Length: 327
Image (cartoon, rainbow, N blue to C red; front, top):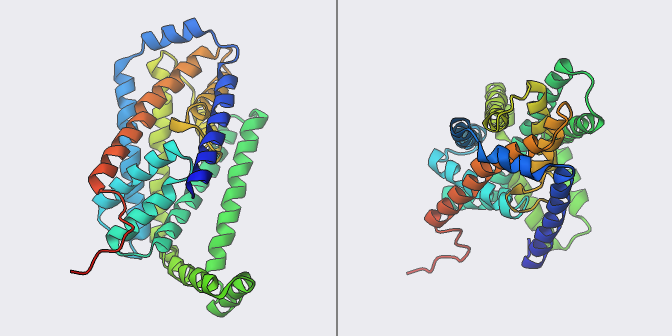
């Protein structure tokens, strides 16, 4: 992503974030919302912070399971890279995946394309959990708002696309080779060679798909990982004096995950607020409490991610793209 493209992406994210922020604040009693924040319960807010930290730990653990068949990578490196990637995503949406793939690739001597493929596997499992939670939500509350149903079907579409890509990985190598050649036949020779080489390296990142136990462990860790965020959402509401139902909390989470596929402003400001407002207010007439809860979530989850990610980045000395000089 060039500097110019990155700048445009940031501007687009800020615009979308401001629109979402305006939508979430529309009709909100600002005085009541500030009053809710001034009387926040400290213990639930602290547990929100802990839940966010546990989420990152389980996320790194899950990544180590996916990468296990590829190469042994230190858990400390993965944990640090997850924070760095998440912090990058919270500044420039969707930039963190490439960054953490490059970081882990250079530190572990594994092809970055293989690392990136493992992140693709992560995404498929993330949306599988969304679909699972959506099924639970339908059982708990069959009469969902249209925007919630739409979000669930978008997640289902993402899973189907991901599964199609995964199934294509297991097509016999000769057929896959012909398809690859068909894709690059109209490209310059050098570029074609680079693409083919990266595709071959990337296939290594899908090694986890060959083990049933690895797939099961990855799915269970995905459930555990996202349960931490669901818990953080519920506790954010508790901290401002409101006990949300399970269906409301799952709704907020689904809207949040789907909303994060769009460009977003720094700290996902606006996206988080709209998800809370829509998710908690479809059975709650007032919007100031959902908005106050979203502020708690942002301050106790996203802001710490950005701070810890920045510290991890400084400690890692970044990514040195220059080749080392031979002494």
